[in-house]
Length: 396
Image (tube, rainbow, N blue to C red; front, side, top):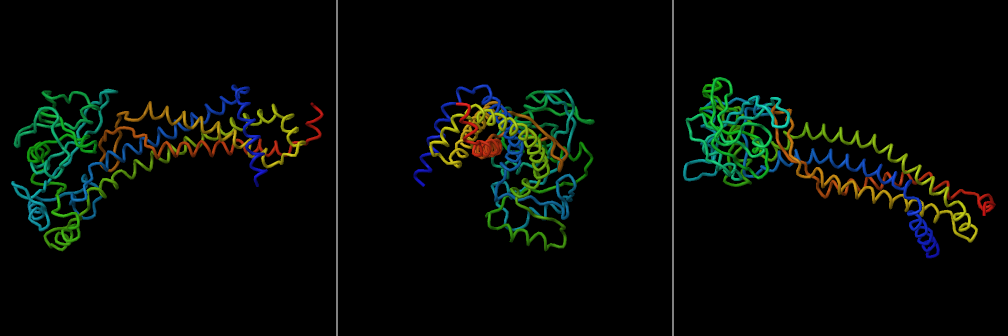
């Protein structure tokens, strides 16, 4: 075993030192693998960023109540009487102004994007004053809160960055109403930053929703009190509702777009990987051909076939690691933190988010690079091991 290991190390060291003599062909393999890793990491960072935006707001103590059988706020409806029953239920945290519960209304409005000027759906949410207690991460960073009963709105930081004309002090016309932007808010990078907030009663009147709401957000007195709270609501004959933790609800809301992005990203990266593998195969075949005499000499001196195979695979892996590391670094520099928006198919509204190039994604990129390198070096390694010693020595 020691002799075999020493042979592997010796041959691999010779191969590594000779890489500088084949910079052109080696660069082809490195660049090909680098391109695959850049695309792979960049596309999957979209899914990571979208998931982070949808789940950052999640608080185990916060739950959402909607009509039973619905999968989004858009398809839910609750009467004012039902929302009051929910607010009076036991298990809700209370503050100086009463229960920490906000009955809310959710609509979408068309508004032009900064980048293209094309109109897209922007979520406009009507909330009650308790919404700022339920969502403790929300804080005003410019201007002030809207005043109840007035056509005033506050805009999430991400929405203000993605859509034009949402600066504090601007007036916007949606439908038959003029709305005054009075503030911008942050919410810890969560999906709430993609929304525009106003007074729920004003939104009801503006969109002729009567006294109806779509959901109620509440803060539980204890995160462990969900089951008791749910039992109290679902067994009440006056209600027909479902209760879900905000974390679970938001994670489910991001499922469709995350699955789509991940599937497309893997498909694109797989197609590119095929080309990169062929590039690695060609590179390693050239490397073996240029060292025919060296390999034959080593075999004649007693070196086994397996150390030759190991050395070729090690060289291919080394080139793949260089390409993978370069691709991951480039993806991190270019894409990490890049702000964009996409439609959430569950709510049919735009969600602004930032690409997230995480350490896990970078590690996955390196693993993919190594796999491509090993696949690209396998056939040339076998050819090197089967090289006839007599035939090769005739060229000496």
